[in-house]
Picture 1 (cartoon, helix red, strand yellow):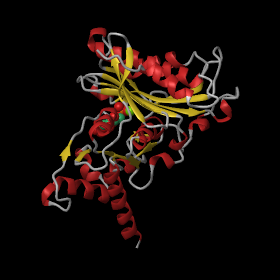
Picture 2 (cartoon, helix red, strand yellow):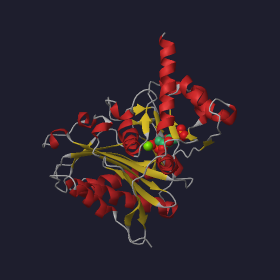
Picture 3 (cartoon, protein in one colour):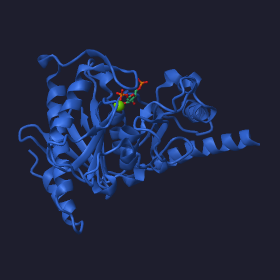
Picture 4 (cartoon, helix red, strand yellow):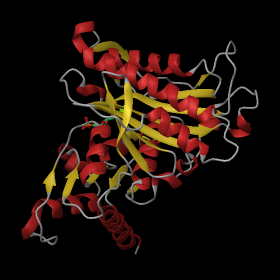
Amino acid sequence: MHNGTSITQFIIEEQRKTEGATGDFTSLLNDVVTACKVISNLVNKGELIGVLGSAGSENVQGETQKKLDIITNEVFIKSNEWAGHLSAMASEEMDEIYPIPTSYPRGKYLLTFDPLDGSSNTDVNVSVGTIFSILRCPGDGDGQNPSEQAFLQSGSEQVAAGYALYGPSTMMVLTTGNGVNGFTLDQDIGEFILTHPNMQIPEKTREFAVNTSNMRFWETPVKRYIDECLNGSEGPRGEDFNMRWIASMVAEVHRILTRGGVFMYPLDSKMTAKGVEGKLRLLYEANPMSFIVEQAGGLSITGRERIMELKPKALHQRVPVVLGSKEEVERVMGYHKEFDAENAA
Ligand code: AHM
Ligand code: MG
């Protein structure tokens, strides 16, 4: 039995440190936490309540939606639209932004989310998660109709980011720019309890996560990095590496926060042939995860640039992602720089 700090207490105490804080942000985070508890319950019940399987529709990215993608998106909207803290929301599962209906007051924040990341894993009962990011609405949501443009802020502008991981335990990992803290849901009392204070990613690691079935489509620097890992003690790295691929970014990032490693979904020629620049979405996957990873002492890049410095061009923009332990991510960046310099010459 855990008798520690609840996430509500933690958020309120954090907020007290901020001068002029109105309590709006605390209340918004609480609504996000509630949504994640509801989703945890749905995911946990699974086929008992008939929520597994496909919905027979596609999202804006042309991906088949699972029933749970649609249900969890609705849960997020319903939990977060009424309280008056938000001006608009945006999600992986909605083509357009969702302005807060005029029947509710509008507030100074924007919320982006992927309600159920890794949802291809639900039917096989493997961990999935929710990812979210909170931005300030330009003009503090001055009553104007919020536009897509308002969301196109670089990751470094995020006010908070977090994820919920629905695994053997349900966890919530959160940053407000002051380190990273992890909470575990105590199902008996329905509260997240602080169990992983001040999470830090080990700098050096010998573990990587990548979908190697795409190897033949990768760029040379990525291929070089992974080849060197695979060659282990017989290659230039002189050490053996371990590999994992869960196909749930949330679970992958959580492992890295816990024991280090590198996760990548790099650019490949299949994507460029289709005119897309990556697999993962910038605003509600890559940016929040980059914020968390960097707040835990790691690094997150596209291969060539820091993700949080990118100026977003579109709501559903995709980017290549390489994140995790600092030394390894810096190495991957170095390989890209070397390659680009050789090819420019
Ligand atoms: P989703 O948002 O449609 O669930 O896709 C994102 C997921 C990530 O969680 C995961 O890292 C990746 O897609 C897995 O891709 P793949 O099936 O190519 O291995
Ligand atoms: Mg996703």
